[in-house]
Image 1 (cartoon, rainbow, N blue to C red):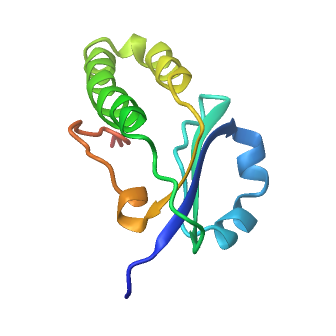
Image 2: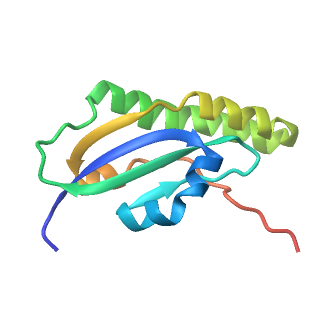
Length: 128
């Protein structure tokens, strides 16, 4: 497949609004990503669509702040806290959500769809 650009919009939205129109949004967006935590009233949502508009990548300083410092260093510290002190998981999640900001950018698909991940994820734990 030839390389292509994506127009990505990242927001934090009320859970009920995202769920209300999820099927239609999932059909219209390629890709649509929503990180669900049913205990929280809002969730981060990322929509991306192919575009031929001129590129508007995220500024380098904002990328370092969001992707390196926020999504890796701060997330790692809070993840460790939440793992060692399970009662802190709710406040830690709210703190992480408070640090999220809206983004609107156009860039090469591989830059929009990937980011560095230095943190081991524990997204779901199933107990039998």
